[in-house]
Image (cartoon, rainbow, N blue to C red; front, side, top):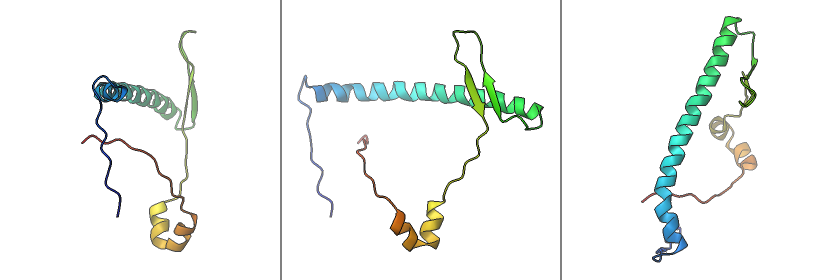
Amino acid sequence: MPAQPERLEAEPGSRLEWLLSAYEPAQAAFEEAQARFEAIKTALKNEGAQLSALHGGAVTRITISGKPALPSLTVSWVVQRRLDSAKIREDLPDLYDKYAVRKGHWEIRKN
């Protein structure tokens, strides 16, 4: 049975109180910036896909550049292979248990 969680109250004027007050505004700014960044990456990938389609899909690596002050980026079509751990766990549970690695981390959830 897991231990009961500890409770930590932030003292007025403490670093913990400041962290709690900064959490939601920082999270909102992060999510807004992340959404904007993802939209830019998607648009750049779409530009690459359109150019590749013009060449019958034969182009799989494109360098995009502009003025000297702008970054030079490479857009690539990447094929990945990965193991389906759920299928391995279902079909070969002993093998899965033998090679599965347990890791932990702290996480934050809003109450």
